[in-house]
Amino acid sequence: MSEPAAAAPPSKDPTLDVEAAYFAAGAPLVIGLDEVGRGAIAGPVAVGAHVVLAGTREFPAGLRDSKLLSEKRRTAIAPLVREWGAGAVGFASAEEIDSLGITAMLGAAARRALLTLHEAGVPVNDAVILLDGSHDWLSPVLKHPLTVHTRVGADRACASVAAASVRAKVDRDDVMRAAHEEHPEYGWDSNKGYGSKAHYAGLAAAGLTEMHRATWIKSLP
Image 1 (cartoon, one colour):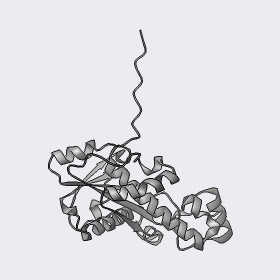
Image 2 (cartoon, rainbow, N blue to C red):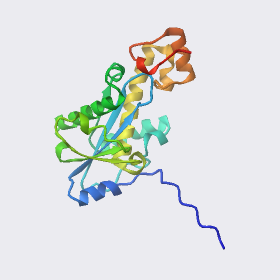
Image 3 (cartoon, one colour):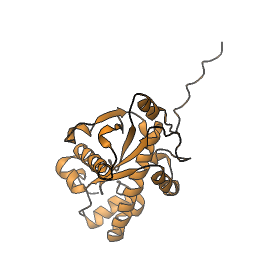
Image 4 (tube, helix red, strand yellow):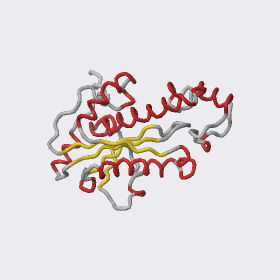
């Protein structure tokens, strides 16, 4: 008897199938959200938002979750993402993260991105907000409730969320490259604030900066 066929691995290429289901149920737009920088020890956390309108059937070729794209490819596709639809990126600083915690600041950064869209005329109140992951960290910080749906793996499966991840990653990387110019000893141009060996060597030599999440760094090497 032949062995059962192995299950196919999940696709790395997103689709608009999930968004289309919300459109079929009456949603006029879907706003994908994704965070970048959650696990860094320096720099802000960023949440990207990308708008997909009902009737949209295509998206930029090669779009994927930002973690699956090289820096060169992310840089190349970012302008195509911006042309594809409206979007924004919200940030929360290291100081805010130290003071109020990462979960609250994920929500704050997302709210800031959505406020930017609202101020630009996007009808955020009418949207389905599609949030990557299993935890809704957005709703607790909202002054008025929105329609928020969580989905594990949305950054890989859903084009709106993949686009949001690219926006957030590219914009946050720009912030960290600029910070590197002022503090080159930490290697932020390459590690983007994550806890690499070079970053910890810089900490041992030069100590903390205002960009560091001090409460995340228990001891220096």
